[in-house]
Image (cartoon, rainbow, N blue to C red; front, side, top):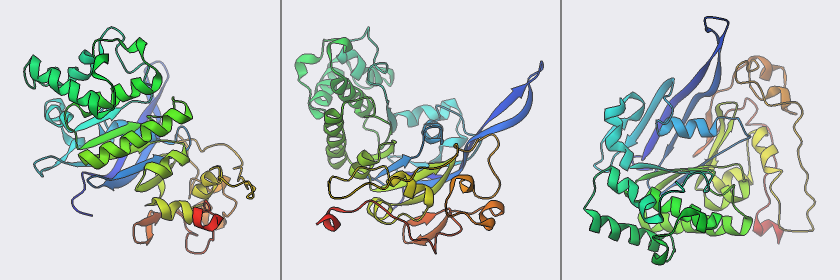
Length: 341
């Protein structure tokens, strides 16, 4: 990989737990705890995991919508300069906002109902004082063409559109400033399945044409497999496995990844799904278990897993896992189309 667009090292976000009359800090919720990954130009990295594992908090820290508690967030600008976003103040962040944009989960609440589509898409240009009114109008029309919406929609309001059309408008707004990184926080989870496929294919087409990098936050592994170059699996604030998509889906090396993949439907009636149901509840990020955080729910856990904390270790080129038994376990993935015959 060449110089990555985004290089995250040891990212942490700990929320204080305050109790008592004077708000004494009694502990911390470790929502994100020592997360590291990188994304290259034109690449899609997906963050997956159960609800509450820290995916959205990680994405918000990267965009500095939430201030991280520690770690480094190195972003490569359009001029090739590497900047630690985590160390910038509000004034230093403003120039970078053009190059880092977000697509929101809910296409209904993310658009201002009092603004026309032309005003919504053109707002980033207006706020950043780019061009005059005529130039902005031309740019907005171009963006509508990019997301495959008719220009006749410019003067309509958001209530006149379907969920898929609203998400296309949200994508057009994110593209207005020609960003090099887009964080997509579950951008298709609120849409019908048929519409999900249209939006995902649109995002892939835009990536091919414009060369943006995506950080794709999701829980639907079928969508993740279709859109991702690499996948990072999170559990209780930590990345437990990161690998190229085909490698992770075909031969996972962490028991938690195996359990997640067992829920992916296989389009073959001859194959009976063998769902792995995890016992117990997700670990409490305010009081995680000792050793491996996953060991209370892991069917492969041994005594060593209860006392020794695993590190994220590369076991194959581009494939890293946080498991003490990664080298000896033979785990099941999702059957490929070739193996289905």
